[in-house]
Image (cartoon, rainbow, N blue to C red; front, side):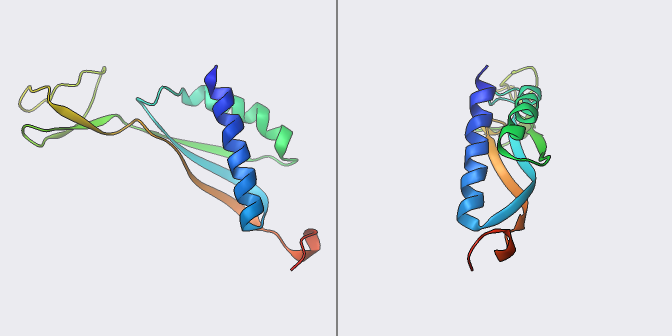
Length: 123
């Protein structure tokens, strides 16, 4: 299950950003996962729920936005949602299409508190 290794890397990235930016308590991590990314959102959520407690002593919420697989026809410029992995333009029937969204796996944001001097960080 490669989702566990992705979540491990995600948590490391959030922790590093937290150190660099002087963040305190993390409340929420927001991800975008494309339909065509090869990543299963439910497995990411499950792995995060299990692995987050190893890095944070408080609950951190994971919010996942699934990005639809969309494409644009290079023949007629029609933008469309790709259904059942059928990469055919619904307007002209052409197969000369370019994927425009749905392949991403992106850390969108981290909601956190600023760390203060009383939390052990020198000003």
